[in-house]
Length: 143
Image: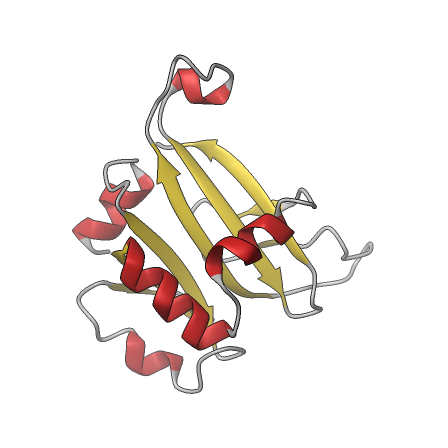
């Protein structure tokens, strides 16, 4: 695990974004695992990169603008794994297994004035896209 990845999940890298990419969106995802800013998972790789660069990489790999995708994904609640490398699609029926194609995530600093979850600490905003075409999101406190 990279320090950057650990720091991101802990809410210490608000200027960065995290991208989970699988073979569904990147032809040779295994080659990305060799990067210093990458963490390999069973079916893909998580990259933690500077926000502007990350949004550009996201658009090049998925064909979608990052914030437009996030806006769309906010329309459906789902579960995103805390390591950002998977999730539970809200469109999956009983016994169905839907795999995540990609995840886009960023963190926001604690903000007591906003209240709610933000008053308790830094928050991860994660947006996932399933292989079935559904998009969904989840927020949680950084650990």
